[in-house]
Image (cartoon, rainbow, N blue to C red; front, side, top):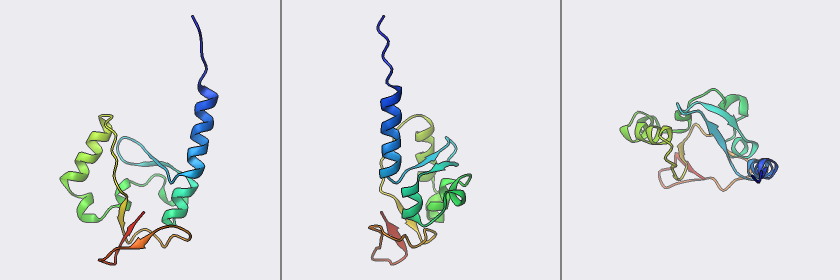
Amino acid sequence: MLAVDFGSDAKRTLRTLGRSLAIVEYSPDGTALAAKEKFCEMCGYAAAEIVGKHHRMFADRQYAESAEFREFWAKLRQGEGQERELVTPAPVRAPPRTAAKNDDEGDWKKF
């Protein structure tokens, strides 16, 4: 039997992604477990302000209380990947060097 260790390559890849992408890691129930530096810079929060909080902190209240939001998390818990544009209301602080901008309604940030 041939044993191959992909561990070091995978770990190196994950470290690189963590440094270059805005990543936040959530538990299956939506609680933030970790927030990478780029994500924190983009949103204007320190990791300590995100970790332990639910994903809804970045969602519009109406959306966070919607069936669509519950379905989003149910699908994630079932292992179905989700691709979405991050659209978040004003709770995101003014990010210092990002492509964030106000949309036509003036109170949403799109990244």
